[in-house]
Amino acid sequence: MTAQEAPGTSETAAEIDPRQFRTVLGQFCTGVTIITTVDDGEPVGFACQSFAALSLEPPLVLFCPTKGSRSWAAIERSGRFCVNVLAEEQQSTCARFGSREPDKFAGIDWTPSPLGSPILTGSLAHIDCTVETVHDGGDHYVVFGRVHSMSEIKTERPLLFYRGQYTGIEPDKTVPAPWRDDLEAFLTTASEDTWL
Image (cartoon, rainbow, N blue to C red; front, top):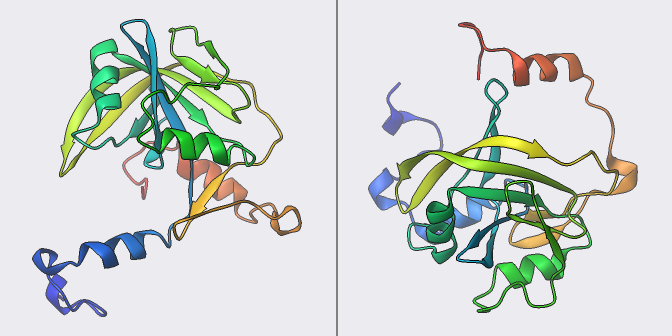
């Protein structure tokens, strides 16, 4: 079966409607992060959903800034960044860093990470990185970061984004995955038969 014959496929890539594309991708629930750095002595940051774990050995993460992002330009110059994973109650922080506000750090408490990038007070977790490699990704870059340090584990709940809205985890809806052993192997195995 060719890609054009795949069930449910009615358009080629050249005919994909951007609004529908965004709506369909919105069905994928993501966490929310603020990626930060310090550039010329000033803190810089932006809200980022496109963050993911990449590798355990070596420890790598990735995020995808738009090519025209001024925050990305600052991160590229500094060569370092900190990923701040937002907690459920940090919706206003996310909105501020996702806005065009010129001083996104006004009223935001932070401390420097070991590499000097801002750790936002109240974040659920932080991951301190240096830029490893940068790859083309259409209208975005795909940035690989090498992890140098990270926070302790907290028990608060994450801020989530789903269908264009903030959401969270309902306390009575969280249950251990019955396939936790398989998941652990999925995240750590790096052999020829790994299905990732």
